[in-house]
Amino acid sequence: MKEFELGIDDAGRGPVIGPMVLAGCLIDKDTATNFRKLGVKDSKDLTPKRRDLLVEKIKDQAETFEIVLASPDEIDGNFNGGSNLNKLEAKKMAQVINKINKGYAKIKVIIDCPSVSISPWTDYLKRHIKNLSNLEIVCEHKADKNHISVSAASIIAKHIREIEMTKLKKKYGPEIGSGYCSDPLTIKFLEKHAIKHEHDGIFRKTWRTWKTVCQNINQRKLF
Image (cartoon, rainbow, N blue to C red):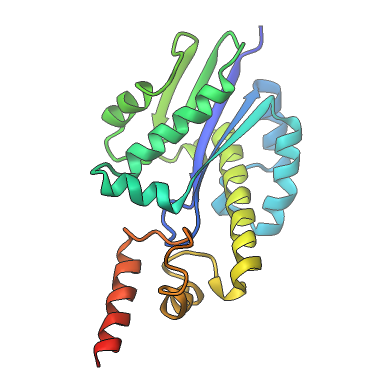
């Protein structure tokens, strides 16, 4: 009987523009060996070109994979409801597990934990998983660097996040940038278009970056 490992990781936790992406990649030991030979590793350690080459091989060779998105509106709603991003991510990762966990005898689930408090976060995650009977849940920090299944999931998640940003660039222009708060292009886009596109569902309005830009816009209007 094959033993399977399900790696789960995210991309786009921090940006002020665009969705957060959660991805799960289910593999067996033979596939894990092949992934190592291919050079699969944490997406942050790969060039975009290398990532694009690997993601197709990962999707082709994996037993299966799943992707779940969290929109800016979902993220903001979660904050306004008194919860936080870590809890939303637990719910979304549980969705990934629930989609994949059908008909397999046993799966070891390895998650790159977003919370500093691993044990309480893991307990919260488990409450949203439909069937725990065949699952071994392992949540740890730096899992994307230490486990090949999580590395593969990180590549898929990053690839999908880039696809989502490409869609936004086609609609709003390349000046939208990467969506990250550290990107000067993104900040300029915010300063120029925050009010115009406020209700388009692309901005995370609970983010400090959004609030600061809007405050500055309002102050300029006053003067």
